[in-house]
Length: 165
Image (cartoon, rainbow, N blue to C red; front, side, top):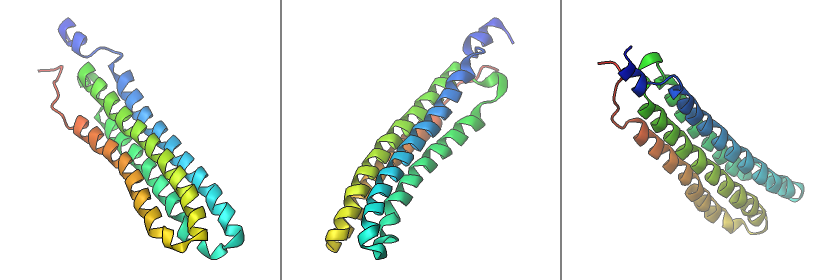
């Protein structure tokens, strides 16, 4: 490898790619954990009075778990791209951007799902007609994480350059 190739593919380039994969996984997992915990408190509160609503109320928890899957998919895609000497600084920063995009949008979506899930299941216990509205709001909150994954996939599939010609 020549000195010119080392300028395009420095030894520290994989650090940024690994940081992107880590960001994707950690932030989406934080969002999913918060959404699960916050919704779980609402489920626990209503299950004392109306245990027949427990299975209906698990929907926010499932939707929060899907957020973590988005981060896992992007992290696996990023990590499968890191190959030895051909991993350029451009690719590493692109992968960092993809990981941060899906990670932070997953964190925000998890927060939204948690808040909506908690108040939604409590409201549904008092007024059953709120169920459809709760589901619609949960879908809109979930889509925030999906937008981050779409941006990450677009970044990942953008044209790249190679160190070795």
